[in-house]
Length: 188
Image 1 (cartoon, rainbow, N blue to C red):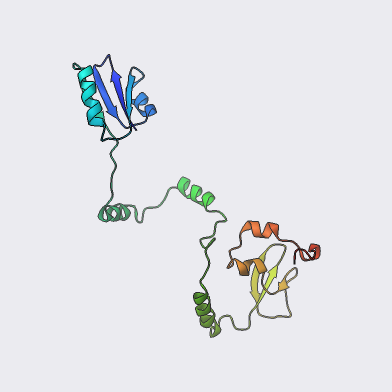
Image 2: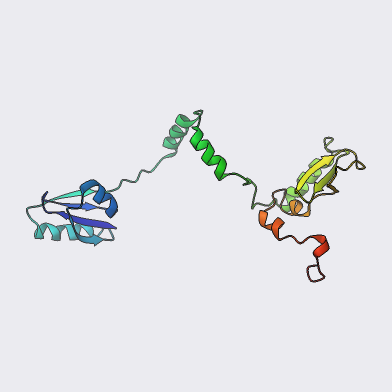
């Protein structure tokens, strides 16, 4: 929205798309709002009408400039920022913002990619002889070598929620989960 302001003492008219709070901060409170214009197309007609009403006053314009970044400009800005260390205040803000947030949360692998990954892992010697165990209290999962030496509090197998969500469970799933002992026939 474009506003037209009348400054009687300074003897000029200001045409601007800045918000009213910005105009008050820059020019003070000694002005009067003449009219508002929604489209720039109508601005010429209205400004001509205002010139006829106030022939002795000068008309000034102040519009916000919108910068359009080209790919070349973006690369230059990126290269300038590359390699610079961030300040500790910024690092702490980012730590707080992304604490507990997973990169993969909300995404799913497609079936063909799951098949590809399973075929790839079949011949993998790193996982050979390892068994999954999980602790239902702490929701911790890990792999062990000996199936007979399961750590205390752990169960053999994987946590059902982590398999469904691709190891990145949502907190709401774990809080709404009903323990096995308290399930009724309706829940099954």
